[in-house]
Every structure is written in C-alpha cells, then in structure tokens.
Amino acid sequence: MAEFLVEVYAARSDLHAVQRGRQRALRAAEALTREGTPVAYVSSIFVPCDETCFFLFEAGSIDAVREAAHRAGLAFENVAEMVSDSTRKESFRVSE
Image 1 (cartoon, rainbow, N blue to C red):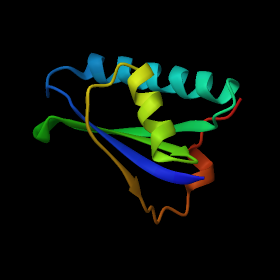
Image 2 (cartoon, helix red, strand yellow):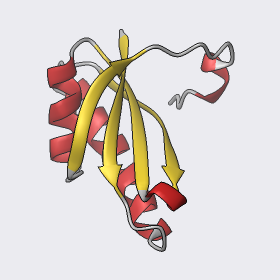
Image 3 (cartoon, rainbow, N blue to C red):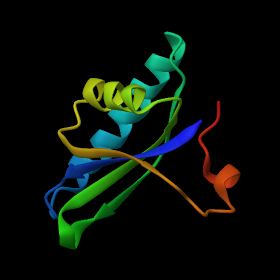
C-alpha cells in the first residue's frame, strides 16, 4: 500500500477539533476496510503555528483516501501521495 497525506486547516487554538478529526479518520478507515477497500489511518501531525493538520493514511489508491477523508468529515485542502523515510513505521501502527 502507498502512503498519503491529507492536509486540513485547523485553528491553532482548537486541539480538540484535531483530536476529533483523528478519531473520525480512524473510524472511516476501519469502515472502508470492512467494506473491502483497505485503508489504514497511520497518524496525524498538528502544526499549530501554521494552522495545519496532516493526517497520514496507507491505501491502495488516492481515491480511497479521499473517500476516507470525506467520510471523516475532514475539510481537506489537499490529498497527496507521500514518501516516508521512517524506519520505525511498524512501531507506531495501530493494530487490533
């Protein structure tokens, strides 16, 4: 699966909105996976001084990630495939 980044505007003072977005993104990815479209929510990065939040996903296509973001109610500015150089990838993946 490829890695994707969803960029969302987030007010610097609204950490709770970011946390709610993370929970909704996780649930949307799980629902899509149950329906047969594998999508994994990986993590999020909130940059308060830039009023931006990045939600990281793994999926087979950018369309699957857009659908997850849409279902999560994320008002995204951009969705893009990304390349990560993280060697700790398996250590922070959410598992059931």
